[in-house]
Length: 473
Length: 165
Ligand code: FES
Ligand SMILES: [Fe+2]
Image 1 (cartoon, chains in turn purple, yellow):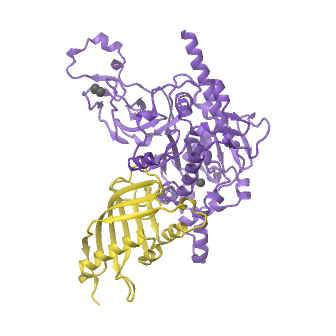
Image 2 (spheres, rainbow over the protein chains, first blue to last red):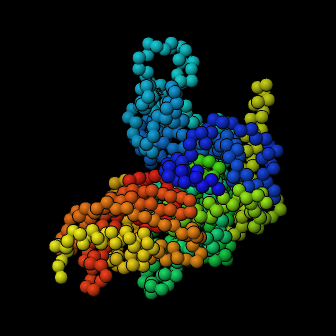
Image 3 (cartoon, each protein chain N blue to C red):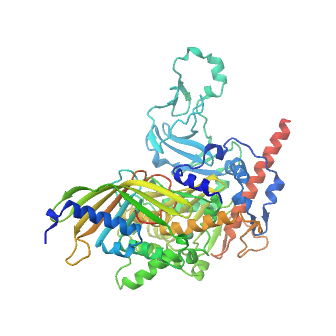
């Protein structure tokens, strides 16, 4: 272990502790289809998938460019000129409300590369003005003005990259308020990519009597010294809560049994206690998978099933949807839905977690919450409580998990065994299914589903790149 | 016995130094004894945040949740505390903002360090205390009714913060 380095990193670790040089945004790595195939054996994944910075760069270059990534929610930019700054994989981008539409641009001045905006959110006015030489850009991205323009030959400028204005991320979909983008110009379309998994977003949005969500406040930001895939795998890892969270949920249950008596369980006890459910509970809760790496826990029931009712809410839902449909919407208690590669959504809690990959061993987790427009405040209060009790850097449940990820990240640098195991409930030919597939809730099928998609998108992209290189030669 | 209105500034300040000392020396059980039953600990997520209910916070703990945190630190299977974290509060002299018969409000600027193995994290901010008189015969003259910890940078991406600021 590099002790000196670690100390230095920690004292400077706020915000992005990864320097741009480490991120190597523009450095290409050459990876072959054979190298990708060598990372897998049935039910086993090679440790380089988590530990190697070269594999990480290859993921940025191939995998993340092919997938539909979450940018933000349109409630964050209600008015013309409102913007947010975020990252899509290793690319800084900004999302802005142009006239009606939401647009996404690479967050880079076309002149010399300066990031146009740094604030997580702001209001640009009618145009962006670069702070370096005051070039200005309309909210549709076009170049508006350059000070002292006599120095430029107009024709030459128009032919240059700078003359084209901001570089757009062209492939965008606004799905009921959720903005997704695909960085690669060619590739799988939105509906084919997500397939049936969109039902989780639909269910979360339908929980609003108005069919609409809005982002409630800034996200929790939690730095993890581990690979992003460990976090994503953990979302459907139902064999860890009763073990890893014994320290937190177990203490809650134990303390409440000593002092609670017959009083009504406080919200925090209601949220923590179900983590301790036994294996048979998690077995029964079920896992559903969809193609392209998406899947969720909690098909029939989940740890979110038995929260107490919020007064007035059900009546509002009946008024909006009719009884039958309202009951159908609220009877779903999907636990964690993974939208491959790096999103997790909890419908009954109205939260979205984004696992932002920063380096092979560094991931920034952003946990966002939503208000159900038109629903009682009490629901948002529970959502906010859940977020801080489970997802905050100050959360005891978070401490349990992060400890395990970081131990795994350090452990994987050990030799002697190159493989990570995910064979639980593995079946022959299990990836051959149509539309969706439901299995026992303690299966590791969803983890294998993720790696299946990982392999597929990597290989497709590598083959396309080879093809282009061949055609160009 | 004199009331809160004429309690010596030195007594009030000493109480806050004692609190920090307990937190820094694993005196957590005694620290819990300083909290009123309706105690609330709030650490906002946003600089200048005013809403502690409909927005996420870093912490919004009642006495029950703090007791959980403290019991968890000792647990046999609390692996994120194997090995243990340590902390250190460095306080500026507390300001007494207001006082009445019912209570005293103070603000204390602090630097806080939390360490574990090779990691050392430095945080800075201001702690606001609402203090009330302790019942007769208590070890300390005051009790804490509310503590609000405002970090300089609550919106930063933090690693684990495991102990109590
Ligand atoms: S870098 Fe933006 S105007 Fe020059
Ligand atoms: Fe967990």
